Length: 391
Ligand SMILES: Cc1ncc(COP(=O)(O)O)c(C=O)c1O
Image 1: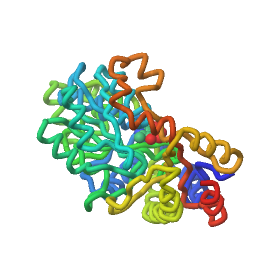
Image 2: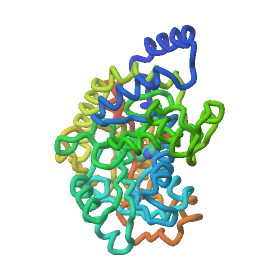
Image 3: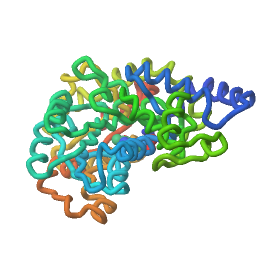
């Protein structure tokens, strides 16, 4: 069986041994210097000013929405757009924190939102924010989406949990919006087992994210940020300052284990994404050429395509169902990400009035006719041969 996920870490054995040594010798295993070091390293890698490390990509999504609320950049009841084809915990924080979650359909040839789809949605619903997903390493015209958002004063946030390392028009995905979220879950580009992060260039937002990450208090801020917030709320004594809760937060902190593994794995990241890119060209390109069976997904507009799975959208549901049969016990496959969100029970429970299938016809088609298989760096040539034969 060719598994979706073949290993927990890149260079697994050595990483596990280093981790055991680290745990045995570390004085502190809760949030500490390894996490801070990772934040600096990752911000540098992603070419962003700030990185705030959290315990999952889902937590990163929850934290950014809460931070924007705390900063009064958005308010409960606002309309927030999201990609109709995404993962559930991109949408759930919007509902949990009191927003109208408005689906924006995707384009069939990129699986992503385009400026055209965004403009169609804006005609019906005034959006205050767009929480776009860069799906499976691809994007559509995200530079134009950014321009539309700027013109219409829509805050653009990127869920980049599936596109770490992808580049469009010379810029890394995750660097088009005010902030972007990342996942270091074991199946993703780079694994810390569980883990996630938010990146931004905005100083104030980064400070708020650190408050949101840990109980709403100020302990992970630097001295001048602490002085400022304590001054503002007239907190003068050390006795109380450590237990003053300034704004709404959660506990989404990572541990030093996350930070340590992140620092180790970051060293392999360029190598990992390069290998996955090679796999993509070897596997997806010949598959997408079978235009009678599959819809072609565009990739040549990207400067660098970095994904951890290869999506295939079949011309008919019958072709997809036959493939599911053919893959049984040979290739592990699954629906494309979480499918059409507007058909998921949680969405229908809370946001039924926005579940308009006519407007999300492409997401619906991908839900019914799509599947993906894993693209991991350890795929062998025999395994690639099997995949090509089956598809
Ligand atoms: C687009 C997207 N956002 C968020 C997440 C959540 O990340 P995590 O599994 O780290 O919570 C995922 C997970 O697969 C995802 O695909």
